[in-house]
Image (tube, rainbow over all chains, first blue to last red):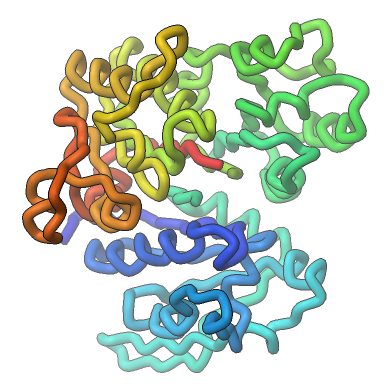
Length: 136
Length: 102
Length: 130
């Protein structure tokens, strides 16, 4: 849809459900898929909570939108990064997080899980490499 | 790529400043605005954090937000520069992109 | 240089809309271009024409509308966020069976694609939020 291809980074730093930012930022990612940009999602601070598996929202009467994360591979998202220090500070490991599969439509390359836990230096690198940062 | 980082929340309310300083790389700029200006004041418990940041980053504070909250330039940590909204625009132009730590 | 502005919060509750306003005004006064101002999350509430703020305080909605008129700005409100929060134009009223509209004429409701497009087409995206 566009000739210009930029490196988009969606910066997620807030927990789900307490505020709407997690869900509405995901909506931007989904719509953004049609624009064929190079997209990464970066989860830092409380943002890491968005990827925790087993979310059951029946008791709080809110839509459970966490299944949407698992479909991100279908929305042109190949890069999902989680800050290691943020996970550790919250007593979490990658085992607490959903696995998100990715299949490249052209090469048919299949990756079982594109959620990558990265150290602070790598987070900095990814931030520096991005062309545009969306914050919510 | 040089980034202009913006921090608009108080360091005593949110971890936004701490995270910004942690991930910002050498040569980047940080603009403290709205409630974020409190991090610019000398004598607070985050002063050493900010001073450490000044070692690798340029730190600015939005003057109108500082003044609104009752503080003047004489209360700032040494090395922090005051800019107005026009200066904010210049910083956005001079750096390659703007990254908001909300 | 071309700027895209994103505003995540409603009028008065947070300073975001104020900060964005002064930044945008200065961008324009310096001769740069504003490709689009996009209101998301509670930011859509900056587009209701029905506010009555106190006389001795700034009128945030009108201030945006006046800036918009002066510089022919594209002030866009996200349709999904607007539907959730009850910001309605004629089209939305008809489509969703609402008996009233409340949007200020200087703003237009459109899709999230407008934000993504703005980020692609502009040189700088600046986000104001909480």
